[in-house]
Structure formats: C-alpha cells, structure tokens
Amino acid sequence: MATDPALRRLALGTLLAAFPGPTPPPWALDLLADGLAGHTLFGTNIGTFREVVATTTALRQARGDALIAIDEEGGDVTRLDHATGSRYPGNAALGAVDDPVLTARIYAAIGANLAAGGINLNFAPTVDVNTADENPIIGTRSFGADPQRVAAHAAAAVTGLQSTGVAACAKHFPGHGATVADSHLELPTVDVPVEVLRRRDLPPFAAAVAAGAQAVMTAHIRVPALTGDAPATFSRAVLVDLLRGELGFTGVVVTDALEMKGATLAAGGVGPGAVRALAAGADLLCIGATVDAALVEQTADAVVTAVTDGRLPLARLEEAAARTAALAAWARPEPPGTFTEADLGYAVARRAIRVEGSLDGLAGPLVIRLHSGSTLVQERVPWGLGPHLDDGAELQIVAADTDVAALRALAGPRPIVVVGRRLHRFPTTRALVDALAAAHPVTVVEMGWPSAWRPADARAFVITHGASHANARAAAELLGLIPNPAA
Image 1 (cartoon, one colour):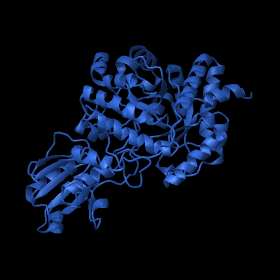
Image 2 (cartoon, rainbow, N blue to C red):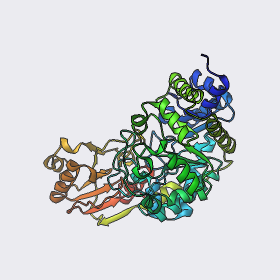
Image 3 (spheres, helix red, strand yellow):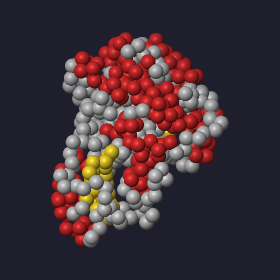
Image 4 (cartoon, rainbow, N blue to C red):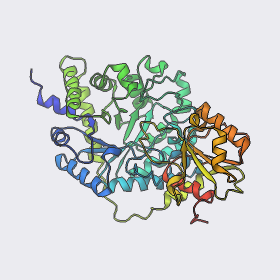
C-alpha cells in the first residue's frame, strides 16, 4: 500500500537528519523539499567558513525554513573549530570564572559565529550538573557541580545565544551529570528518588526554561523512579508530566541522537525509537550522525505505520510537526554586521586557570601529553599544549607503554610537564604520574574534569577546566612556554 503523502510529510517534519561530507548530496536536498525538518552538521561537514556558508545556502535553497543544527558548545565540543579546537572555553571554565555576564557574552559570540554561517539551532548549552567525577560524557561540558551556579549560567547562556537569533537547546533532560556510563555506548542508570532530581538536576533546566530556551534535549538515561526500564527519551512521565507540567516548558522537545545505544538498545532500532519518542512527547527527532536516505525513509515509514495502525495518535504527530515548524519560524538569525569579540575566549580561559603549588623552575621543560582518547561527542579535535609551542614539541605517550626511567632519560636535567585529560580515571595513568613526580620535578596540567586526586610529589597541579584551543593557549602562557600578551 502506498504511503499517504500528507502523512509522510508530517513524519519528515519531525526528523533531523545528517549527511556525509562538506557538500549536501542530492538526497539530502530532495528530502528537505519533501518536508524534512532539517539537518545536523558535524565536523565531517565543516571545511572553511566559506564552505559552511555554501552548505547552509544550498540547504535553504531546498527548504527556506530548514533547521540547520550543530553541537557548538565551545570548550571540548566544537564543530566549527574541529580542526584546531575551540576559540572559546567551555562551560567548566565559565563556571570556574563564575561571571554570568561573561557567560552570556561568550554564548552571544558563539551565536554570532553560527548566525554568520547560516546555522539556526545550537544543541547548547549543556546544563547537566556534573556531580560524578567519573562521568565519562559530561565533565567539562558542565558549568559545575552546584545546581544553583549551573542554573545561573544556564540562563545566561540561553539569553546570550538567543540574542543572536540562534535557538538554544538546553540538554540533557532530566540530567546526565550523575552518570558513570556513556549513553552513546549503553543505557546509563540514575537510580535516585524524584526529589533528588528536583533538588540536584532540575534547577538548571527550570532556569533555562524561564530564560526562554526554544528547545530542550532529552537524555538517553534510565531513571527507574520515573522511567522504569526505559530511557527518559521514551518516558511521558519525564517529557510531559515533568518537563511540560512541572517546569512549564512550551517549546520543542528534541531527542538526543536515536542511533545512540542508550536509545537503540531499548527500542530495537532508530525507527521504533522514533515512534516511542513521539508517543512520549518528543517533537524533533535527531537520527544521528551516520545517516543516509534509506534510514530517513525507514524512520519516516515507521512513524507513518504507527499512525496508520493506531499506535501513535495522528494528533500527537501533528502537534510535534507544528512545534518544529514554529521553531524553524522563530530561528531566523541575521548575520552580524560587525563582531569584535575575537579575543574574548582567550581572556576568559586565562581567568579560569587554577594553580596549586609553585611554577618556579620551569624553563625548557619536556612536555608530555598522556593519551586519553576522545568521546564520540568530542570527535577528534586537537588538544594539548603542542599546537602552541614553537617547535610543537609535545611527546604523546600511552601510560601502559612507557616507564619512569625512560621519561627521566628523555628529560635529562629538564623539568617535566605532564598534560592530560581526566588523569584520575585511569589507574595506569595515575600510577605513572605518581611515580614520575616522586622521582623528578613534575608539573601536572589537568585539562579535563578535575577530581580530588593529586600526585603527592608534583611541584604544581594546574587545572584549566577544559581542553579547548583557548584553554591550552592560556596554560602555555601561564607556564612560560609562549609569551603572554595579557602580562
């Protein structure tokens, strides 16, 4: 039986797809013309800024009100600056500085860059309260561990970003900060009473809603007290009763990527996940990063079939499509005429650094970067001090593949600077740094989420609160490895 064209168009109007490469393939444009809500841009889509503008122009020629979305958080998660690292420090650094006015300015600067590139929906800010030091997915993407501080900066970020006409999307509801698992790879569980969520995780979302956030993104996390065995993305108790009922949110509920294991393991695939998310109250469904025309059509067909056989009320699909269309009508940014905040991110990154111990005697050090990999959301963005050193001399090592004697022999009489992200999470890394600091003058630069762990004999412990280009330059300046223009 042929698909009803009107139903197909409604279903497409709730889907946010993606495509490979810097140029939209014909199918990506054809689906927009057929009613697809829009596309998300990833690092693989980003070349020069002129190419970004050409891409967004082509998408809008196919559909004038297309949603063109991106994860541009600043800090460790950047798409526009994926080749170099972000020029803006991320949320952990902004929370450390704790000046909401500066946070609003940073997000307005990010928004201006997106507006100039033709992008109208930013999957930011991350407003999760990072209460678990071992959290593998949030960490420095969070403004901090205190709900009230995170709430203040969440509101400032939404206000700053949306002042440019780019829609903000606060994430990940009802809070991903207490997890110790990555929802890209599995379904994390936050097993706490609802009152704990209200006290610890929900204040930043309430602040973002009060600030007028146009969208809120769901989390693929299980909260047994609310969701049972399912993720929040598929829970009406979370999306309707809690988000809309208690917090009064009237904007667009966006799912995190349905290709993530936290969703597919529960639903059995992207298509079934789309149906369950819509039924639960979601409006705009992110398919993910690995998308082709067949997957979009399969997902739309699953939604149409669910409406046809009565599993998904037509009124619910119409409501979701209408909300998504309203978001597209709101999010029509005008490129800024002038923009003068180019150095703001670097100035804020300098203020975010914290130093424990002494930085004396650091002339000509051996700089070592301990390999820690990257998460799927971070992509493969350069980090560390090497890009800022005149000779790029930063030795990258894997803790398990080296030993203290070899590193000391390389350093000779020079001190050693050890650079890492989330050094506390890996026993082999902690053991190596502890042993090295006990035998040699060592300064540690932590560019990930800071924990309580400190190597007992380190001369200094430097916390940058992020691994962006701005954070790294600020650290290199502080250590005397490059000139500090602010000095």
